[in-house]
Image (tube, rainbow, N blue to C red):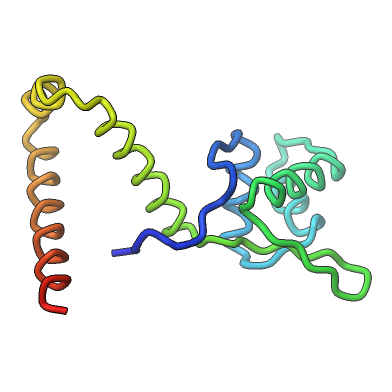
Amino acid sequence: MTPLPNYRPKQLSLGPLEREILQIIWELGEVTVKDVHDRILADPDRELAYASVTTVLKRLTEKGWLTCDKRSRIFLWRPLVSQSQAQAIEAYEKLQGFLAVGNPDIVAAFADSLDTASVEQLKAIAQRIQAARRVREEQ
């Protein structure tokens, strides 16, 4: 289970190309513009300007998803959060949005419409929450 990281990007919303490039960076770990550009152009049906990749990398850096270091004359980008940390942040934000509804009747009506698999998932989540609470109480 990935805990919620202490660090969070400044802006969580990402466009489709930003998500795609971030996925490439998570796979490769540390990248140059050429690394990302080559990966995207490996698909023969894709076209993307080198400058567009540079723009997206800069935007992801401004949003707080990446950091950029210059080594010699090469710029290298790497992620500030792992993919699993990003998923934890996204899940947390969605849960907070759901809980912000605040009306127990709406939440209960939602719970009543869940299928069996979803109910089992919720039970598993509740068990993990209880286990985490027990560990905290013992500390």
